[in-house]
Image (cartoon, rainbow, N blue to C red; front, side):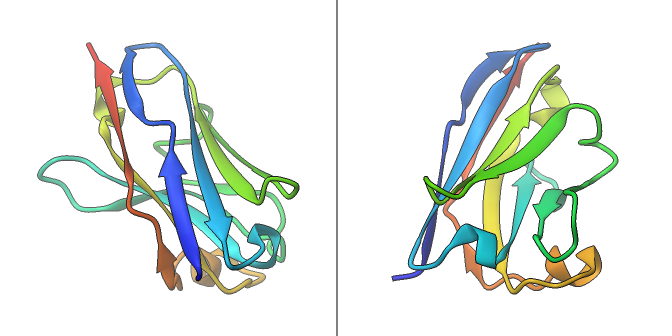
Amino acid sequence: EVQLVESGGGLVQTGGSLRLSCSASGFIVDDRSISWFRQAPGKHREGVACLSRSAGTPYYADSAKGRFTMSSDRAKNTVYLQGSNLKPEDTAVYYCAAGPLFSDYLRACGRLDVWGQGTLVTVSS
């Protein structure tokens, strides 16, 4: 079964750090584009970061640049999203999603066909 499972969410204070995990089963993460999204209460879902081996270095949304880092561990078949200097506006349910490999991030980050269930991150002020 093709599946993504997020973990690592929780409560963190402003300025703190958190590492989210996205564990895959049924496929190899390095053979797919993997994206992180988040959805805050009452807001639309927004992209945070995207990693596609065919496209090169990870792509980060402006809101994530300098504070979030995406990486993968092939041995664990897991993708991570490390967040630091977290702010209350980072509070959201974070989702990971997978799609085909593309050499451009427009397609790599947008054409996704497997989604995880999400993990809640709450940043207290």
